[in-house]
Length: 193
Image 1: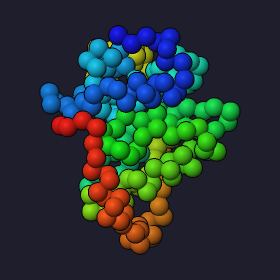
Image 2 (image 1 turned 30 degrees about the vertical axis):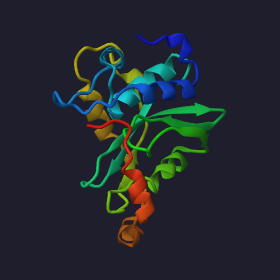
Image 3 (image 1 turned 90 degrees about the vertical axis):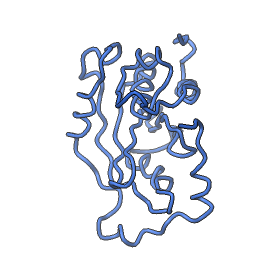
Image 4 (image 1 turned 90 degrees about the horizontal axis):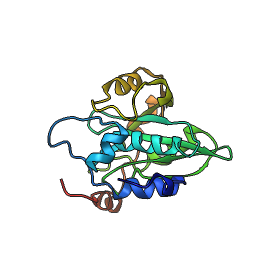
């Protein structure tokens, strides 16, 4: 069990999320509550975002998460948001070397999301980030912290939120692919599936 008293900054929370092994869902799709994630000691991006949002809430932040939506060829991503001195940052659980923690240096949420844009691509370099949701305040849900069942209702609510385009639709075909070096670097993973 983690010592919650030591999780007193976003940086320490992110370090903890990084140490948790990645949940490859070998037993089927899951969306565990923060307490279940702590017990099983594994998390995918959504479970990591929920755990991150919970831990942020214990140090005075609102438990906010949001979706990053990609093309059908790629996977969506979920992050936990926090704000310090008027600037936005994000916690993120990922198995890859990109789409990770963001320092609280962004003036608004769009600026924060755009920091993920050039890192969000397929192995062939095609950039895939297309939109992001409004933030979802997890305080709207009962028992989301300790539930022993999957939290698919939170996923459904995220899907209902307004989406904001990242790239003007008329420019999508003009996007330059990530170069060979970026593609090679993106193949590095923390945990083998």
